[in-house]
Image (cartoon, rainbow, N blue to C red; front, side, top):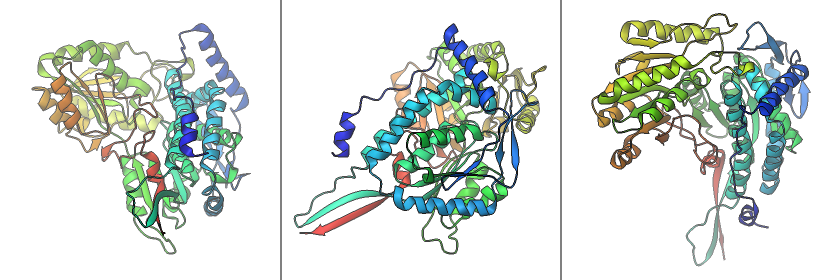
Length: 524
């Protein structure tokens, strides 16, 4: 049976629906999941996974609950240099088998994993809440995205297995097909500890590659459980090596390794640029030019035109700016508003910000902590400087009486385009307002950034919208809606400029990043 026939036989894709936590029974079930996670996982020490077996490292490190930093929730291993080498060799060995597996087998594993995850979504929500401080809705949105990833990548596996047609020749049979690359290092951040590494890993696995999965040290359990779920779904255990530990072992040495064929990275601009530079150097014994796929953040703007629905715009700005305490690469950090409606939109957004209440993520607080104390101190340095360069409308302080790095939703007005508040990624609950003389000036200001990840444009005017579609320089543009909340399979996600390499996870071209093209011509 052909891949195209199998694709036609699948049920139509539908996004996983979110839980309605306003329903008492649903809320009670989520509270029960937190109790289950505390019983099942808190206090445990988890292993490395190398060559299909559990392994212990040179010692362990604690994972801290950012919602209550007095609590160490679980422990993970510090891998050694020898274990990194062992993991690379196991991944290379597994590649020689996995690369030739039937695409239907890969797709079936992903579909089975989707079913397993649907049954455990609240458990994964709870783990994430304890690791990175997401409230119930934010965690649930991410785990629902993981379900969607499994469904989307199952379909993409079959689609790319078909190859592409070529223009015919009378005396040759010519095919264009796609082959796997080899060992892919997946290096992921703490803010989306399930969906981001899973998307990168599924891209690699769907294409027939094997994976070295290196999660952020703040959030390793979300990754570990996802890998174990894949193994339960039938993924051969040798196809994924799970490594945790220190940067001196799993930083440059992982990127530089001669047998690593590709690095898939999501994280900071600084680290992404370092990876890009180091991967360009051909190491002794290396037989290829390494491929790098990087997503490195954003400084995302929302433009509000005078003719827009101002209530919808203000709500969208506040949701995108302060959801998950602004710790999303897609978060709105710049509101750029036409002069005639500037004060009105500013007032509405300030009211939304002041209504948000901080609280423990486990108790579903509206806004939780930033990831750790160091992040809070860095954010507050921007706030301190902003007090002298702009007009502080609300926030700017720590939230008292909570045991974590909780910061108030903060809004600055009258921010100039040269201000670091306008130009630099802050990665916290800090929003700037900048006045535009007209809607074209607003687009000019929005594009005044090294980044180009997401953006929003609010207008009822069809011509203005068409111009924004042409001129707003971002990888993901949203018209009359907030700039966060991309859905796998629909909103292919990835940006321009210093936001990264524009690899669009969840999109129709994503697997190409993990493949190489082969043309075979057979003379009759």
